[in-house]
Image (cartoon, rainbow over all chains, first blue to last red; front, side):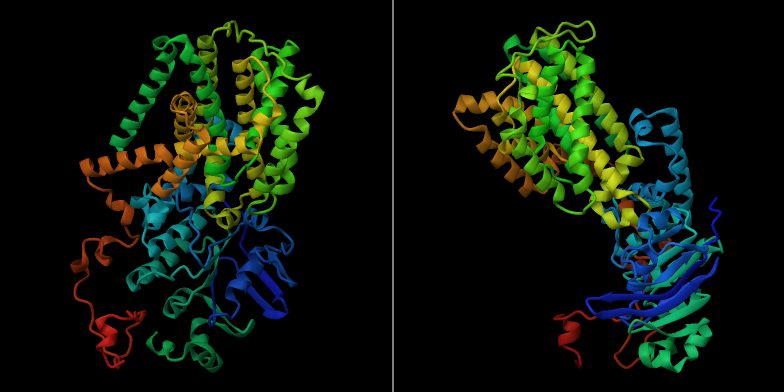
Length: 260
Length: 371
């Protein structure tokens, strides 16, 4: 349904906070259909990069191109309308709504009726509601949360809330989806299963940029990986290249790579 | 879930029948409070949309009630038919709300509360004293017929007002079940997440405020018609706004039913408090405190919670509420034994892939170990 390719290019992103350089000229690219990892120690600037890419905190310098269009000055909502959807480092569910309503909100941009039609519950509004409900049933099934649709989102275990947030982002039919530590708060079994789901759901349908501390997960699912430290890219390559990179090892992994 | 839905439907039908039968079962002297209850319910409903759903606070809602009173009187005196007066006043209130909302709702946080507070004070002291709005003091308000129904008796006025309230409730409940209703609650729960899904926040906040103002203005028309006179501007000051805000807080901010519960409670509390020689404001304050301490969504929220506990007790608790997205075999959903024995790890042994170390400070594991 989404005709956009999901080609995200960032050129020389610079973000400064009161003189502190959080991003010192970062270039990265997510090609259509890829899963790209963005890793680095705490405070390396990963979430700042997400904020720059999605427009929540626009960069001081640099440009963001989405499918060739310069979106650097667009609002986050306008970028979402162009197919770029993100999740957050801290889970941001609509906690008092059910899982179903959370996912339905993912369909906001695709909803086929306006508020007046909604208030009058016209034929068109009922059709829009039915269509949205069907769409999210499918997504809920693929994400393993079909049995939880009626649960209040805020009551769910943390790892499952993470999954609901991812499912909600996917419900928006993004061309590029930016996931900020989706595996944080998942137990090992959940994280493992999440990796499978990510590959399964993804299936080349959209591009993914993934921030994640769970290194084995990143090495397993990503096509390419960027490594960030102190606001600069220190390495970039395939999982195997990253695994073998000494600079990365020193800056970040320690011995974590050996167990992966 | 089915049990709850049926109970809810039954409660709804019973409440509707009781409301319709009310003026036929009580003496004419009581009908006045019935209309007042509807006026309060409409205002409370307007605040459910604005405060309960969108999370924005208005400290000047009495000003919209007053605006409805004064402009309603003008339209009625000019011979405009009653139903059209309601629509015209709704339009005027919504337009005024845009003037306040467009600058303040583009920002996050408490700006609307501040702007509406100033608006309420300005209306009370200044705007409502304009003679083109207020006339030359206490104007009398006629009671025109509504689509052929004479409203000279309080009973008929009650029935007309009840029909309007019912219509407003249906529209608001429909809205809640559509995309816009979800968006408003999403803005309240996590504004950034809504933005990330492409929601144009400012537009929805402004629309919610306009709808809220329109409902409060329409309540004002019935208020004027009920009293058959325009009250002094001091009736629509900041204290009155706080009182109006208390209606849905006590009744339940999150749900249209709470508006009706709160509106009805406070309309009928007036004669009761008078009989005991207590000020209604004092009772209001106490009730607000009790509700806040109860951690429920007002009286209607308590009722919903009770009904939920009852359903859980009868049908068994929905396991779904605590489930995981991982299929059962991989989780602890069936109790800890389902995962089998956990691997024993010592401090020297290498971590298994993907494993995380959890330290419980102060437990036997850390205090008794080599650490």
